[in-house]
Length: 282
Image (tube, rainbow, N blue to C red; front, side):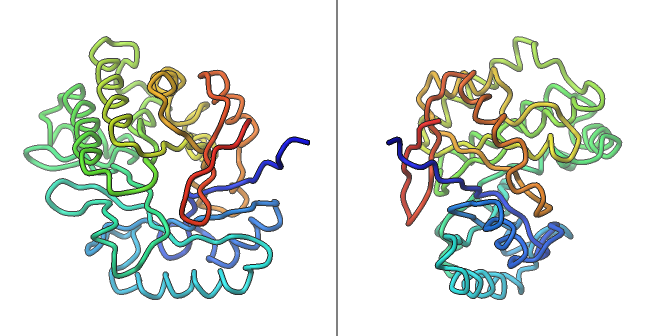
């Protein structure tokens, strides 16, 4: 008999950041949806914050609440305490060493802020804000802005003191409602290839993130199928996460995501449990 597939999600937000449900609500929903493992990963740029990150003073409360809920439901589900930690050059980084005082079970590392000489923009920001940010920070040079996004990821990957790489082509969200850049352009494909190599060298696990679909921005996950095929060719391990900001989205598009992974050549996805990775057939 084939081994039972264990359902997991390591990218889940709560009311401690920009999520819409409490920690306990997310865990109870995960139990209802037959998850074996749920990892809470509220946004953090410790020791700083924006209005959608955990406030620095709330980090300890967040960790203690996750621990409390973990103990309460230990016979029903494995609950892991993590952070989606931002990388901003010279300001903050997704490093287990930086988060040592909180003893996280894992870190999801993400680039949201793209920093130029005269400012920055959020890669997943509103289109009008992104365009304004690119004008200010990059003199309106959209190609340079996108290249900088991937360069920041490669800088982050050089240290790779984290567990999962979050939405590695998040900038593609800006092509959801209108076209910011050409994904078929040779320069863009070079960025993907260089980043795929950096990911492979780092040894981290990459998420197939369905959140952009759940929130109506895209019709396919991060990373794109072409990017995912590159990762497969380099034997980069993957897992499926939903980047859930609502409890109802905990397993959003999961069945489709497994088929998406197969299309790119994958036959396994990774389960992170008890502090280590285990491969599961799909």
